[in-house]
Length: 208
Image 1 (cartoon, one colour):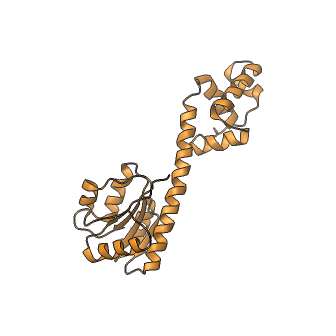
Image 2 (tube, rainbow, N blue to C red):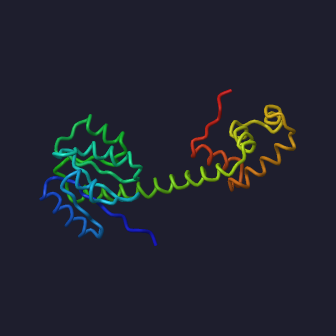
Image 3 (cartoon, one colour):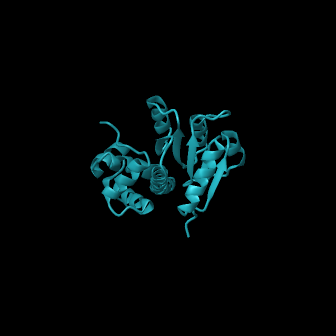
């Protein structure tokens, strides 16, 4: 059974924290935790990938955008929603570049914030699946021998067996054997599937 995500609220305004906690609880979100400062969140929270972070921009110790960037540096896959009463284009651009899912100006309606939270959590789930798939592809890549990886690179470049064989100084039959092993180790059902997996993990065709 999947873990229910936690929704963290970080805002130095007591009234906003309390009202958001009540609203989210009434909407069926059972794991809601609040913090009055960025420092409190960093010191006490234990966020995990897939959780949601409602984050105010203007805070006295660590502002919301700096906190967002610190969270990202720790590699946490959080669905971040930036809240601000002083919205402007530079703040929104910086927030989105740092990975925020949404940017909401105060005052916002109940429907607006609930819709944003639901979209953010759905986005986090989809992104987590994509990253998990890419991580699994990278693990499979690590099982390839050096020669198999060279053959894979040729396959990604769209080279026929004879060309790969010529470039590597081996026979076309040997290339066929390596190709079969690459397909097996990568658990790819087709060449097109193998190419999609490689591209998703960051491997790209070399310019020729």
